[in-house]
Length: 506
Image 1: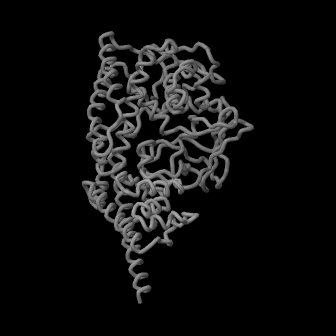
Image 2: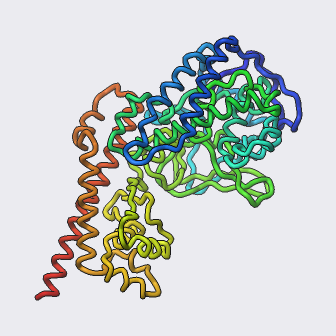
């Protein structure tokens, strides 16, 4: 969390060998009575989080109780949380660590940017596709390095750690953070001590997401992390393989939330040591690049066992260096990365749709969708831009709106790809049903937000708004614009149908 060890330690030249003894900080601990109280609360937390979540409108009902239990735990544990330190003061030691381990940083430097926080800026003019950074594997925290660490024995015996590599990486990160002379200490010390992910928001703050599908996703994430924390808290107290772990007696919710958020916001897939299977890893310095629209410009050099970062575009000296994180929606960026990118070319809105099992044609419609690798019940998407409806959503809606005659006629065809093509409608009647349904759905979703786009834009112009509120306003504005574009698109399609119908009739 950006906290510096009081006992320092020299810079090592490589990660620790499995079984190697390492010096650990001596953290403050809770009293026996406080530990008992936390244990009781953790038991309650695990019980409620282990119940199957309700569906529909009731899926958010147990969130206040879960959040209340977590806050009680956090209050008790607040006395053992260490204060954060100034990240900027620790950057020189981090850069020295990189240099001593063979990283050339001459093309970039760490800088603060308004609206972005810390990032990387270029120190010289560079051209698109220029190689900027080479980060060797030995500097990365990975699932492989976790297996070779003091956590390795517990990984080999715990099913959760075996099947959830991101959780394994979070636990590995937290343990190394608690080790005073960890090889990765200079890197861990400059990580943010807090994040803007929904895990850090209060129930009151989350209400700004009312109407957005991101609200449900945020609460689902919170529930999941609360359950993981309760599970590992009990595991650390009971499992023999946890006896020597430095987090055994000081495993706080704040620490776990920080570790999980660090991994969520910075993890990347890299080839495993065998060069075949991929694994999760944290890549120092490279992970300080902020996101922009573009294409992937990172690679991994198997022969030299290092990550490569290339310039996404031409840059002048002093420009911020960006990279493309991937084609994610702003809702996904908000939940998993803690930011919203207003100019996001890949923004989209999740739309939960399903064919009722009470539909007499349910089985036949489900089988037809399966031939297109689609499900009768899942989230589909509306996209930003002039064409908000993609092929998958269009195919689902056409099948959803089929009557029996249309369905039987479609079943006789060998290929059903036409269902995904905008300009190959099945019939006038089916197409009218499709666009009427989508138009009504978009209108209802717009009404579920407590404010309009214009009201959100006016509020966003206010000064001194909290960063998270700015993000949620931008998120809401983007989602509502997608719905407005969808309404406009459905209107256009209906008008075109009428024109074509008139031409045919004439």
